[in-house]
Image (cartoon, rainbow over all chains, first blue to last red; front, side):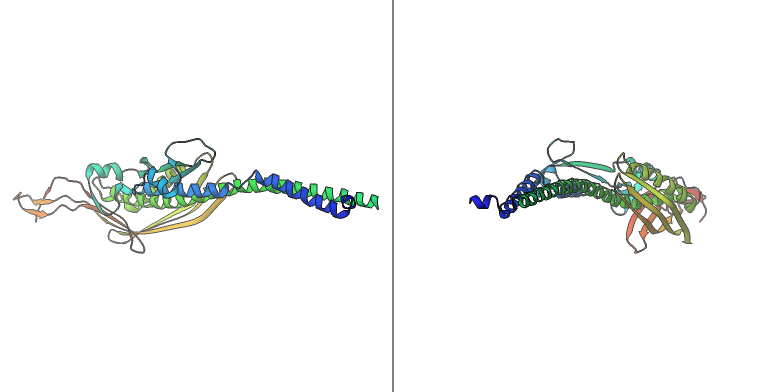
Length: 125
Length: 201
């Protein structure tokens, strides 16, 4: 044992242990957040798009389906992702053929539809 | 021999310290790359949104121009109205799609409007779309085409000698906006409810 302590093999062993411990110390404090952020953002955008297309999904349904929580207002927390969507409003709110009276036509056909809501946000966590 | 082992030990310690430094450096780069990936994903999202947004802007310009041309207060020429409306609407859409982090811009905008037969038009737009953020950008040349049919509004006509005889019924304004594949995008009619006018049968 006394001979081993000063041998080249012992120095090799010490070096390997040193590298292993240092690497573990560095990486144990860090996990990649990208995939989490990307997945939460995608889920949030799907939720926003469904609602923008008048397919109603409530925050509680979102929670049931995904296990995550979505809020229409900004919230704090260790991992909260802001999802946003730009979605052009339906022309004259018509999803198929429609007939309008003059008042309704003047309201929607004399100016661009973006006077209505087109920007949607949600905070997923 | 003891001196030789000492040099070996020094070399190994130096090597291991270098390895640790490289690991730390690569971790920093990894974090930086994560940030770039997040920015790139956000730019890609905005680009997809913008692409759909401008296509709808194009359709909005078509139906609004058609109404201005053949609706309740009809006037002018459809293609002339469409050209100016589209430019204005694209400018507005560009503004609302940009924020202080992500910039959306349109260049090389050109529109084409041709009357292929009476009140039937072939309409298209070509443009370059660029979306960029601090470290990411995405661009593409885009083109949208539509076939547009317009029916002008006309009030009913009654016989001026016998007011209860209708010579022609009221015709509603209609704009039919279709993709070149035949898929309907918009089919909007308007009843202007104007009083019947005097005429002869």
